[in-house]
Length: 253
Image (cartoon, rainbow, N blue to C red; front, side, top):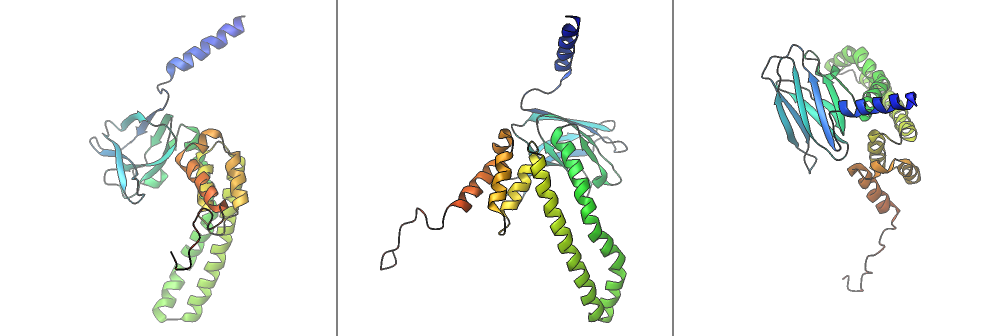
């Protein structure tokens, strides 16, 4: 009985300590070394997907900032620090998101605190390792390529480009395999829905494989914008061309 009481008490404490209600988010940011008054903007893509909309704007105070709001499903957003050249990507979702801004290298800023953001951080770290081969090749051969271009040495240029293209193809194959494996093993992750959506935008997509991955997703993900887009795309791809269309008459009408 004492154990049950203790467990119930602990549950009550956890509920009481939670700052976030249903469909709410809190972003708590650490901005050490960034002067007071600097603007922090929470941005998302507009309906066209071509521009950005500001969802919230706050000021840095004593190296910290906080944002609160409502969100009904996970979605990609970005944090823009006034004066910074790069943005900080994050998945905005129900929960407490923590951001630590690296003022010297925005790309090294950390986003943690919720399942999807922790997953996104790990996923990016893994895919960056795969892409590193390309970066290493470019850094190693940049000087040789520049010299060959200046001297118009087509033999060296073509040789380097051939090596680069081969490496690029290898990285592409490895990356695609990584994406599929991730989606197969993470049915609760918002990233999996984005991966499947991306797969179906490829003309060479394996529709049956994509559908299998979609079916394995948690139901809540199927109800997100990417989830609904996947379902619509699968329906489109599985519908024979011309079905439902009126047959043309002899005069072309």
